[in-house]
Length: 484
Ligand SMILES: [Zn+2]
Image (cartoon, rainbow, N blue to C red; front, side, top):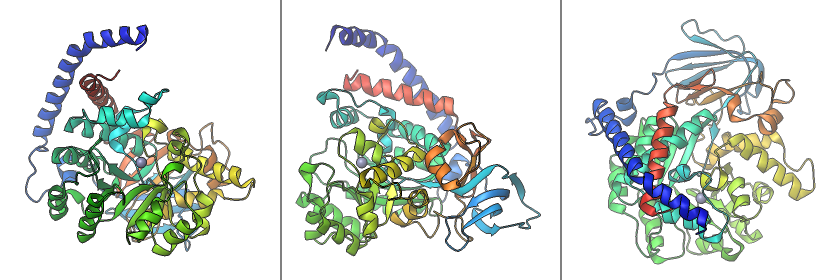
């Protein structure tokens, strides 16, 4: 530690008691509020969403917008309407009649499916931008070192911050890749944040940060969750999966088998460093590649591995901002697309990426692909927009319910206001979304038929309270970890 660090450390220790008192006050306040809402002990037959009183699902008609349906049959409609009722998309077209619907003015708006995020360690969100500049403060020591000191409620507070950012930014599906389940209460706290968010999600149940490779996952808890999943799912808004540690140990191979016995989808990090190339070949060698498997990063894949992934029906998740920031390398977007592998885009961890801006992630994917190819036309904005919507949904196995504005699908859509200075003119809408748009341009977010953001403001998230709780939780865990 430098003298400055020592000084900061002692000041931090001085304030530790004060912060702890404040944290306890906040936690007690939260407990009182949760008790008042009936959110601590679940009422039989009720769901998390009902308990938290998410916005009701109304009947809406988005009128006269520039619709990018991402549905190949419907296509784009300039001056189009979208009719939503009871959480479903009823119709997409021109001059729709819906006399009972509340009209949402779509003038100057681009309307598109909610963005689909495919791999996010949501519990690390409150460790935002904490990956330091020296090896001992890099991402892995930081997330593991602090993660080992999380209390269960920290999962909730980090989740609330992450999911508020997601909703604000136009992301209506997230994949919570939860690898800090230190006891069943940690999974419960993470699930509570997902339930209350109103967003569509997969919760992938994983290990605890720092858990030994030969220590199995808590399958008693995973089975219990699976059996009572209707209590959590809010009518299939949330799904359950396995955050798999890969084919490196017999214990982990058993985890895979147990998850597949429950028909759970599986997600795994592979080939992220050049030094661990061959990870896909190892999974293929034990017969564990398949359509239920999502691979993450796969930066260092051989042509044989790419062919094996394509043949198996497995999908890929790419998180360019963390892959660049940590030095994994450049995503193999073009190679995997050429092989026909479904690709989704992802945040991974704000500890490295900073934020969860899916517009920026789209732009990075496009620009890296063209830069690698030395070709302005290697990848198109429209194709990247597909990865962030319908193809991302396909990669997560949820394309029957989300990812495009198609009648019969659930109503997950966003409206981007083009009357902002970073947009302003109306040119090619796909290029505008991928290259120019940013989260603050998202005017309206509807997830599963519920309006979560309107006129640029979140409706079901008290942002000040969420930030206070996340700050308090972070100072608590830093104090316990002695990490400043
Ligand atoms: Zn990851």
